[in-house]
Image (cartoon, rainbow, N blue to C red; front, top):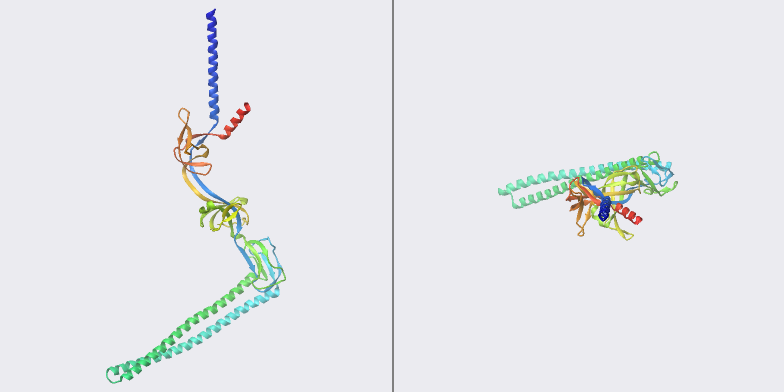
Length: 413
């Protein structure tokens, strides 16, 4: 009986031990599974990466066309108002009929006056040149005569047939004739140059008067002055039926063909924006991206809210849908890598010495670490220069899953 009881106890003990071992294995497996669930994977890929500096700002119409009064006149009607979008050729205002006729007549008279002045200048200069030419011809004859006399007297003097006094007189006469000839020639050449300049100036006045007339007629047409560019009427300075002086400012037109982007550049990024740099310009409201060029950047910073920034201007290809004041983002290339090994930044970890490493599984499925050399990164992916190969699977703890597990455990407790 004692042997049977002892045997029964041993069997029970064995069963209990087996159950305990099974429970331990289950707990270990569950714990390992729970730990494994904390890890996410990242695969090493190969690709390109571009990193940009980004600056925000707005579009701005870079050129203002000032419409001014070409003559002294009054306007009978203004056909636009401030804020109107206009097209090239749209009528801006109408000129008083009498003033219009007077302006055209005045422009025609200016042409006739300039032509008469040209004719007068040409005739006067021709007369002066002709007189100078006559004086020069006479001086040349006198010089030739004096030269022959000097040669003859010199020959006689050398032969002892003429006195030294006669020779000196002939020499003096020749020198005087030569001086007179040089003076006459200088006067003649100077008059020819002056004539060319005077006639050219008079001709330029004719051309200017003709151009003014053509410009006036083109501008006012049949009393109606039309827009020369597409744009927006930003300001009107005058009222109808008020006499204006020549050159009076009538209105301003923002030229929509000259739009640019103006962005704020942080003082620490100033060196990255240089005149001539190629950048991309993204217009938010239109979902449009354009290639641009940095055309200028302030030399003096603007301080606001405890920060300093510099305004940079970017010219880009015109598009009629882009208006002034639209929000833009300008990107300038900071760094770039091609055909590089790339991995998610989540997979990168750092030791106490701030050395980067990654985790992988060995042949037995155990987690191991290896140190890597890191290149550039864009905040989402990093370039790996050494330590991994394309296709490697890396492991990292997913913080969001870890937080969920901790919350579940705290809720269970």
